[in-house]
Length: 451
Image 1 (cartoon, rainbow, N blue to C red):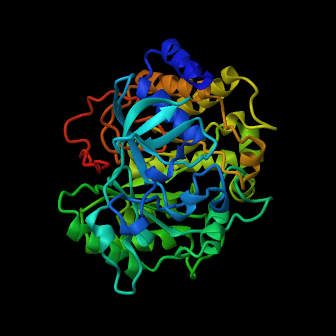
Image 2 (cartoon, helix red, strand yellow):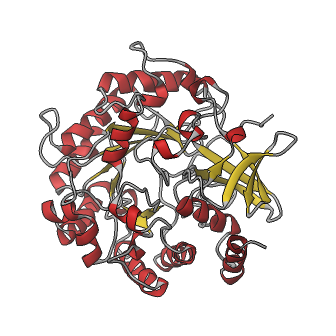
Image 3 (tube, one colour):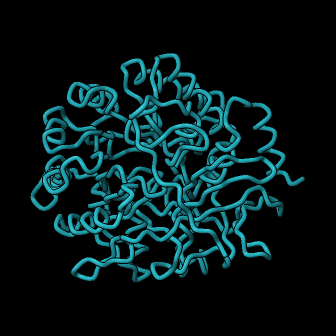
């Protein structure tokens, strides 16, 4: 038995209340997965939905280091099922790492599987190319470039500003590669629009609405880099808000509208609400006061941690606590040289943050940290945080939700192992599957059978 397999099985035995599917999912998200050439897509001309690089690279190497995977993109996500662990349907965002102990490859009969330490541990499903990806905008741009979908088609991800005005070592968040990803996509000659035109977004959404006859796409997220001054003459609330206003006027009630932005003053937050946004994500990134200052120097300089948290609480008065869902980057708590050196310390700190917000009725969510190699923390911590941290976080997250009587947040699809579609962490996979009736519309389950 290989050492990675032994570690995973040990954690599943030690933490039986955490779904076994989540253990594998977190390991794939934190450490990435390799792809045989047989498992890569044929880009936008094939039958498999390719990785869109919708905001960050979420890879453990630069495009030149990924080899064939940079030319023939891997799938956007994979689904794990079956195998010796009898895995329930688990949607995992693809993070490429050619040196990962996990590998997706085709068997002699052509069926894709996930292999760990050379042993097949699950079947792999890949997302079908959606019909709306096969249609171009009038200017020739692809729908995937303007309005890609993730979470197995549930979420339209509108990164309308693909760089960040927190720029350089003294301002950029130390785990974030949004600016580098924009540079590498452009250097590779890929279409990668820096600021997306409102009319282009509306045209892409019209194509999605026309061809998504099953109404699998249920929500959209408006996001992008921080705006510290002005962009096109607009401040952050008005810049992102103008897209929401246009979408809600053209497609009233079609999708759940979400915006990921800085923690803004209450009057600015009210503008988001007035423009039609339903869910607000003012991400707090990392809880510990010292780590926030070290890892988010721009946010500390322009806003400050205490003011950031105050604004999150204030925004609940506008949107309602349930509709304020700040994200944190799970794992950076243990990043060298400043992070906690033990899992116990890291979990205690993160849980303190969860309790702070959940006691106010606000339910944070998290993205599993991928140590991208062009970021300071990625360079210093290529292996990310220990898998045990991520598993214990899932345990603590659910326990804290239960303590304060909270249920899965809206806008994330169905909860529960075998049901969840949220792909960049396992928090939805780890929650009970018995969400209130009508709370969420389950996304589609079709996938491409690999020949």
